Image 1: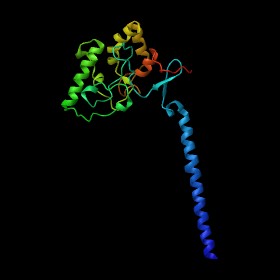
Image 2: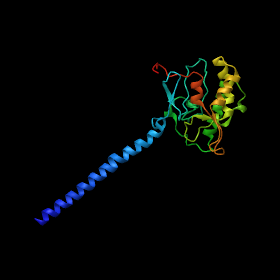
Image 3: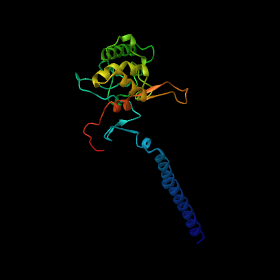
Image 4: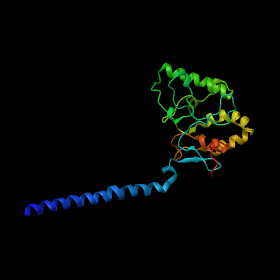
Length: 212
């Protein structure tokens, strides 16, 4: 009898611990994490970036280039390259899936070749001398998908964007200034131009979406 009672007490103790831990770790803790995430619900949902119609065109955290058909006018600003895996893929635009490291070091001849190829492509796209193309137009960022570019790279694109959108360069520079953030805490990092938001200001929309 005592053995049975002792066994039942152990079962009850184990069941009680299981119940308490289930409530704390399986209900209360996840609910608390969810509640804290709601303090900044936009970030919790991927920081969606919306066009003027309220449609999601991307994430404010990801610098993905909008694509235009070959041969058609290119009215948008471009982000940094997101990695290359072949000579035919030097700019690697468009897809976050292309955000891969090249695994090429500073002494890599392959990386040097990519940089020179990009320099020629960017110079041709912007109709500028190759030596004026800034470094961040030629190399990937730490994450490969950062949405910011340097003010110098944005300035390089102003003339083309103004021309293709039928706007004055001064108007486009004003939009660039509105989407330029200073250094964090005033001294960390460098100034950056948020390209996805800037392109939305220029009229980038989500294809096929009309719901506000």
